[in-house]
Image 1: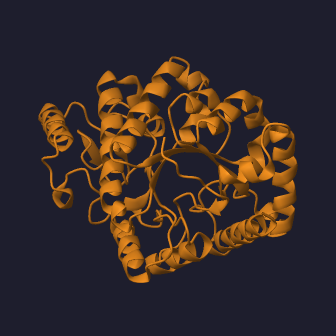
Image 2: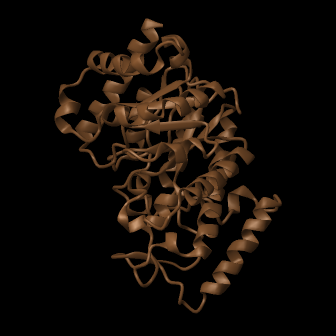
Length: 355
């Protein structure tokens, strides 16, 4: 376990609504100057969640109207073979990071590269730097084959997808480590809110833990810290079991459901891990408008007061805490996204002031 501590600092979930890359990065550096994150801008089709991390996936087809995997294509088996050859070469350290087939491409990585160049010029006082990949469960459930069957039901992709995402994470770490601070990679798993639904009734918890664990292991092997973000409720035991370093959830909207896992929470903190509390609402425009940093602090303090009573002091809890919005801001209007970031900045300022 890395000795990284959140220390009550702010960071963000990846997505932002801007089309102006420089403007989005500037907002992030102001809101989360100690742990900034490169933004995903879904205004650009190549930076949308189900597209940005599939370069190099055998059989992937983007027709403009539909993205899917064609397992019946004449070249599919050859692409699978090439994937594993490149995976083995990367594992043996034989690939140049600048030419890796598992990096973000010219379009999918445009904002990532702008972020890196901005950090080089700005030289901020960083405590860590954050990136992200789509989580393996979400990608496998969201991406379908030529017949409309989710890849979660195809044994071949249960092996390929976590390997691919692990390589995407390692590529980011290889570039972001130049800033000489811990590199955090979040696995964004909104799909886990659907675990256990009728559509996924045949998917076992053991499989979910294995999928998450393989990507987490790849992040650790590259020297990074791994986080999992779920923007709604899920079976949190699966996340606790994945050997992740940071768990991020929407504490504004789902605290009571998460608090059921109090024993797992304390075990998690005891091993030196960190919670990333999603304290700022992102799904309710009225709440975004009406909440203040003071009201959000009062809400969070009341929530965790009962959870941590007798086990952790407030300062001990904050040492193992990061603070984020409840989810990404990519689907919000720009003015609401800016308001979310202002609320987070104000909240963290109050947290640091009260310590």
